[in-house]
Image (cartoon, rainbow, N blue to C red; front, side, top):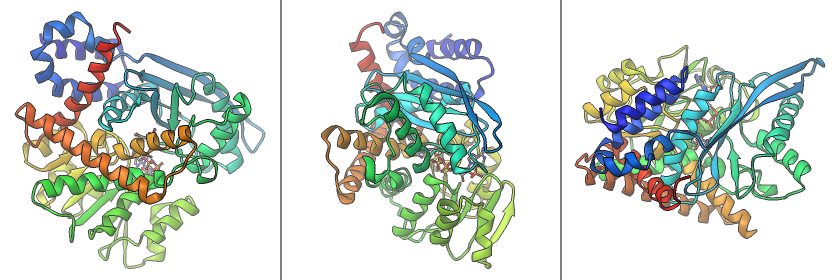
Length: 444
Ligand code: NDP
Ligand code: 2IT
């Protein structure tokens, strides 16, 4: 049996009940076969793959807090510190009822290669809780965040592990977490990114994941003699990534016709009015179906089905495995020719394989959504220097980073005669830097 297959079997056996983690590991190992086979003896002896699939550390803890009725609630809290070969652990915190250790391991594993692709000195980590922020008062969210940070603060630091936002964690939550970290440690340092601009945040971080997604999409299209102008785009989700992907796609001349949330999706053939969406989602924390109250010509549909809408380009920006084989086939049948993932692993393995087998342009999340964490690393740099860059400066750096990621992914795919397979390219290019750093640092 090949070394990669052997390690995949070992991961399944040793990590029961963690299907998303198995899925993420399998995709990476399948891509790495061409690299590993050429150096199999050396990599086996050094236990490279055994080490890379095992988190350096997982911290799991109790998060007790008091709700508005005076009732004590208890949630599970986690931080997966996956790999620190190239820098301090870096990755978001997710607050969603579906969160469990397996999901955070998949996200932490993806983060290792994503962070490597940015070219910046950041290792891979992820954390979060099964706390559901939906319907909670600001005071309840603060009580949860303070309790969560009371435990987490023992394990993080500006040069150790630097969390940020993810699903359910935005500016409000980062603010409460930061305030509690400061009270507990007395340190005013860059321990979190995605901070508010008045206390050490970076301009453009809020927009960075969505903007970066569209920047690399543009690179991919131009490289393949296509352009974004005049194209019809479907974006799933309506959170941080979806909103700013829509904004940048519109600025660059595309028409975004649909957005969704976990209840359903809206279709607006005239192009989404983003001011309406921002007011619903960023100000009122409402549901996407409220869009049709403000724009009566738009249509709301309850449930799944956003990828059945006719489009040229699809940008899944909600959550893992939201786009399955049936969706992939519908996209192709409707003339969609390019997909770039704003979310982490939004396409199932079957959908990804379908895109690749049918010559669709496909940029996987670990390359396509890396602009968020890259700008987080820029926030860390600014905090260390005690300086702030202008929007233009950060945006220019972000553009350069996304261009650089496309070039690396493209070059790695060509090096192994897999031109156009950006899944293989991203996994290989991300892996090469991490493994080089790991081997240089000895057995650790
Ligand atoms: P938000 O919480 O801002 O928005 C999440 C969006 O996805 C909401 O519209 C939400 O709908 C929807 N969604 C979440 N979970 C589900 C689900 N189980 N089923 C259907 N829809 C769901 O999160 P972000 O925009 O920050 O994150 C979106 C994706 O992008 C995630 O995969 C995240 O890991 C990834 N990502 C985020 C980065 C960042 O900087 N924020 C960076 C890189 C990747 P609802 O409100 O109904 O729950
Ligand atoms: O998935 C991700 O890359 C993020 N949620 C952003 C992480 C970060 O540290 O900015």
